[in-house]
Image 1 (cartoon, helix red, strand yellow):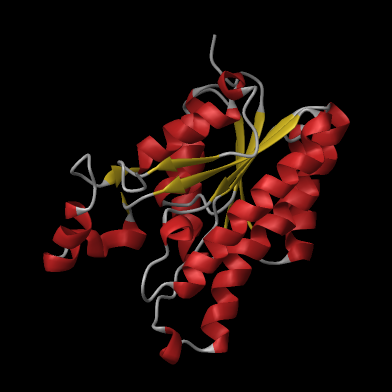
Image 2 (spheres, rainbow, N blue to C red):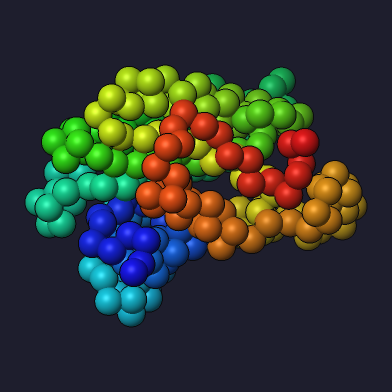
Length: 251
C-alpha cells in the first residue's frame, strides 16, 4: 500500500528543482498532483513534469499561477477542488532570492522576496484550509530554510521571509490542530538546484561545504523524502514543527 493513495496534493513552484522533486515523490506514493509555475518560460518544463507524474498512474495538472497574488491563489485552489474534488496536502514551496547587502538592497527587491516567499504562504494556506476543514483532515508543509534560522550576510530579505514562515507555521498549527489539520515546516540547508549553482563554484562552495558535518550538499530528492514523511500518516502526531534537513549544519 502506498503512503498517499488517492490523496490530492498541491505543490507551488514545482516546475523545477525541489518543487519538481516533491511533486514526483508524492505522485510515486499515490497522490494526485496539482502544481503551479509562474513564467511562460517554465511552461515546457511544467508540461514535461505532468507527463512524468502521470507515469505513476495518478492525475496531474499544471496551473500557471502566481502564489504571491491572493486572487490568483483563490482562483487556483477553487479550480483544483473543482477538478480533483478536494485538497489533502499543500506544499508551499514557491520561493526566490534576490541577495544583496542591506545598504544596496532596493525596496522593490525586498518586496519581491517577501511577497513570493512569505505572502504566498499566507495566500495558499488561507485557501486550502477551507476544503481541509470540511474534510476534517489535512497536512500543510511550508518550505522555510536554514537561513531563516541562522541568518546569512547578504540575505536579509531571504532570511526574514523564511523566518516568518516558521512563526506562521507554528501559529497556524495552533489554530487548526483541533480540526485534525497539521502544519509543519522544512528548513533545507544547501541543496543542489538551479537556484544554488554557486555552491559548486570555487572557494565559496568549499567554504559552505566545510561547515556541513555530513560533508556534502543535499539533493532535491532528500528534501522530497522529508516532505513525504510530513505529508503522510507516518507523521500523524507531528504539527507545528520545523525539520532541519541540512546535513547537520544547524547542530
